[in-house]
Length: 191
Image 1 (cartoon, rainbow, N blue to C red):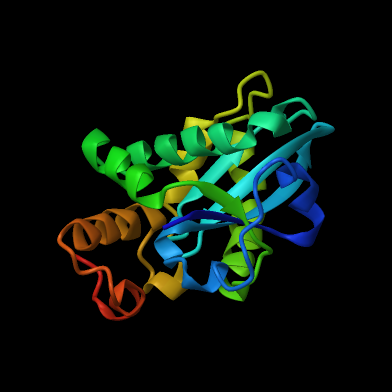
Image 2 (image 1 turned 30 degrees about the vertical axis):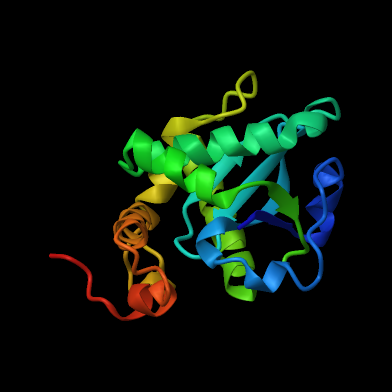
């Protein structure tokens, strides 16, 4: 398996030090292991915003410098790790996710729904940052991400990404990942 990062055209330059996925390899990656990436500027600093293509869980990485780009795969892994932790996923399950994912590769952004949610959450983040200002001295912004994880998304039947992530982990660990996308779109929200 592969952990696939799918940058939009404008954010592709951030990922140039990460190996490219083959054209026939990328469509085979399960959406749970695929993340759409976009960049934005905060106070003149370059930042990355990633969204899981299945659960729409968010990762925000502040102040990515040219030097940081050489280690971007590790920086993104830690961001994903922190996001899963904020969703309430157990450490052993997060470790299993990365062990299953294997190496990190880059492909072009291709999931229009994920790009749309990425843009929408990115926009919502501008409001969240008023309440939880972004600390540009640290890559990771847990309070900021926590707010975005609790925001319901229509394509998830108005579940929030944190709930969707927990559901997907439960199904994946039980070996029922085959049709998880239709599960998220059909299963009723827990009361």
